[in-house]
Length: 594
Ligand code: ADP
Image (tube, rainbow, N blue to C red):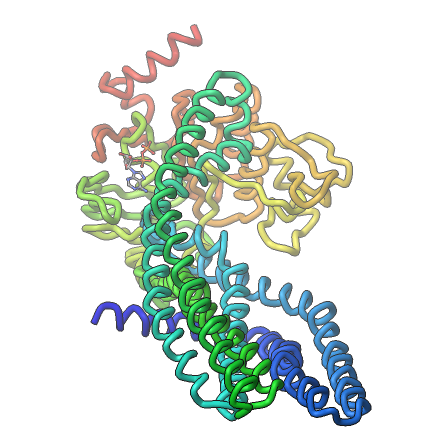
C-alpha cells in the first residue's frame, strides 16, 4: 500500500516538475523529447532492420546496388536528423536551459520573499528553502533528461520488439523471461540505493557545513588567527572516514545485484539462448534467414539493455527526482500564517502606540520571552529600551514591526489593532535600522533608498545626516560590495552602519526603530549621530535599543527590561533617582569612562 502510494507520488512529482518546465520553457520539453527520439531512432533501427536487410541481400546473392541504395537512404536520413538535433542541442538548448534556471530561481525568490519572517525559524521550511536554492535548477533539468531517457527506451523496446516478434515470436518469450528476472532485481537495487542515500544524509549535511566554513568570509578571520582550521579539518577527515565506512556495505550489495541483474539473464537468455535457437533455425533447419538471425540477436540484446536501464538506474533517478521535487513542492505550498488586514493608511505624523497586555513566545517554543507588556508611547517621544542580552528588547520591536504576531494581547496605533493593516502598507509607517542590517550589491544610492530609483539629493542629505563622509569614486552611484563589480567598494563596520542609518533618514517615516544604531560606531561618530538624530527626528517617534547608556540620556523615557518584563520605567533622571537596576548599569558604564 505504502509502496503504491510512494510510486504514485514519485510519478506525480515528476509530472509536476515537467509541467513546471513546460510552463516556462515549452520548447525545451518538446525539443528535448522529440529530438532525442529523432536522434536515436536511426541507430536503433539500423542495428536491427538495416542489418537484417544487408545480410539478407548478401546471403541471397542479390544485386549489391540494393545495399548501396539502402545505405544512401540511411546516410541521408542520419545527416538530416543530425542537422536538426545538433542545431537544437548546441544552439537552442543552452539558451533554453538558462531560461529554465531563471524561472526556477525567480519562482523560489518570489516565494521566499513572500513568506512570513517567522518561517525562517521553522527548520523544515528553512531546509526546504536551502535545498531548493542549492539544487532545484539542476534537478529540474535532470527530471527532463530522465523523462527523455524513459521515453527513448520505451520507444526502443516497442519498435524493436515489434520487429523481433515479426521475425519469430519465440524471441519475445526469452526477452520476457529476461525482463521478469531483471525487474525485481532492479527494484532491490533501487531499495538499496534509497537506504544508502538515507544513511549518507546526515554525513552530507556535515559536508555542507565544512564547505560553508571554508567559503564564507564570516569564518575566514578566525580560521586565519586561530587553530580552528585544524580543529575543523580533523572533523572533516573523520567525516570522510565515516562516509567511506557507511557507504561500503551498500556498494557491495549494489555490486552483487547489478552483476546478477546485468550478466546472468542477459548472458544466459539473450546471448546464449537466442543465439543458439535462432542460429539453429538459420543454419540447420533454415526456417529463418541469416539476416533474421542477426536482427533478432541485436534486437533482443537492445531490448534487454533498455529494460535494464528502465528498471535500474532510471527507476532510481526518477524516484530520487520525486523526493527532491516533493520537497520543492512542500516549499512552494507552504502557507503564510500571518493574515494581512485591509487597512492601507500610511500616517503623515506619529500617533500613540500602545502595547496592551502583550505576551509572546516564538513559534515552536514553549517559553514566553515577553510577558504582560503594557506600555503607551506618545507621539514624538524618544524612547529607549535597555536591559541585559536576551531580555526581549529586539523581540518587542519585532512585534511592533509585525514580523511576528503577538501570542496574547494587542498592539495598537491610534487605537487601531496593527493586525487590521495590510502588512506592506503598515511597514511604510516605519523606518527601521537593525542590529544585523545588510548591505546589498548595488549602488550607494540604491542601498540608501532601498529601491532602484534613488533620488540623488535626498540620498546625499540622508548620508550627510548619518555622518557618512567618505568620498566614493562615483559618489552615490558607486557600487558597494565586490560580488557584482570588481571595483565594488568595501566598507568598514562603522561606515556600513552609517549607511544603514541613512536609510532611516531617507525613508522619513513617522516612526523610527533603531536597534543598537551605534554598536559599530566610535564615540565621536556616536555623538555626531545623536546630534543629527535629535535634529532630524523632531517630527518623529523614535524607539531605540541601546547597550550604551550614554545614548539613553537623551531619551524622553526609558524602559528597562529583564526576562521579558518591564522592571523600570521613567526618564534618565527618574531612574537614576530610583537607584534600581538601570542606575546600577549606568554607574557601571560611567565608571569605565571615568
Ligand atoms: P535582546 O534584544 O534583549 O537581547 P531578544 O529579543 O533578541 O533579546 O531575545 C529574547 C529571547 O528570545 C532570548 O531568550 C532569545 O534567545 C529568544 N529568541 C530570540 N529570537 C528567537 C527566535 N527566532 N526563536 C526562538 N527564540 C528566540
